Length: 63
Image (cartoon, rainbow, N blue to C red; front, side, top):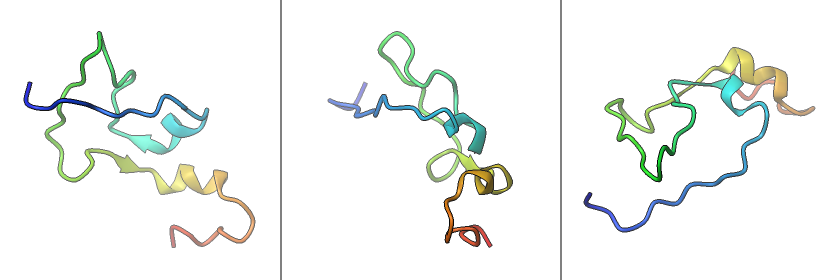
């Protein structure tokens, strides 16, 4: 109730929910979002799953 606007990109690649843990699906429900109580962005990148989507030359990104 204390903000004016919430920007949320609606482009959602097929792999996004494969590599992110802790993200509600869907994020926006009835034009509202739930504020997460986790630190930082409130999500965890699953590096093991994300590695399969890296392009050539980026294979060591998560190492």
